[in-house]
Image 1 (cartoon, one colour):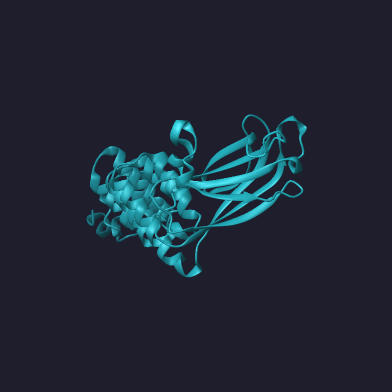
Image 2: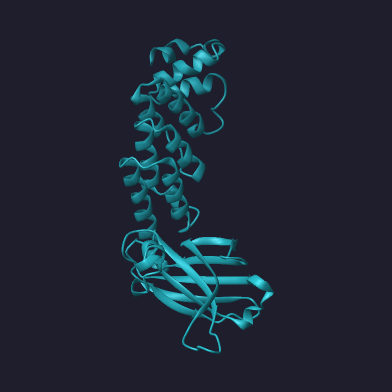
Length: 281
């Protein structure tokens, strides 16, 4: 979604354009329309609502082109899309456009081969360009949106999409404190699949997340707490009795109990002062 409240540009790159019927791209013209997804796909009579879209002509040379479009501050706060249209103007009617092929894609999108309708294909890449000075604020805002979405009960697939959008701002975006807080809230609500998606996307596991999951109390939540704890324990300290001691030090008695259930021999590995350690639970 393009809605983080700063001036933005889009860089649209087309490569290796293959049009239907074996026609060369030099025989046709190309335009791009950018705007809210609803304007691209749900305009009057099923056509794009051009009054809500930004239009730019693409000069394709040797099957490739690259252009940047000023967006200003994108509104409204909804998914945006790009429509690329290849067309020609019949000699008999120079004011008419005869569409040859097109594609509609939600943006931004990484470089990939996409199919044209009714036939053909192109390599398409659409990147967001924002002022460098705005990156820190954008990262914080993206992670705050992620946390808010989890509070509102979105589906795991939506969380995965939000994480992908946040990573567009840099691979370290999901290390922001707001992303870690989102993980901890999800853990406290025992949203196991969402926690798994966040971890897979690169959010850092923490002991606070493990404690939040344990506090939920259900067997599923305790399993989640154990998994978070194990991922958050640095090495050395993740093997043998050390991991049991660490669980007790982190005030995770139910996790410690689960670790003992899985490996009763851990109790025998405790040092001579292990009795004091056991009393912590």
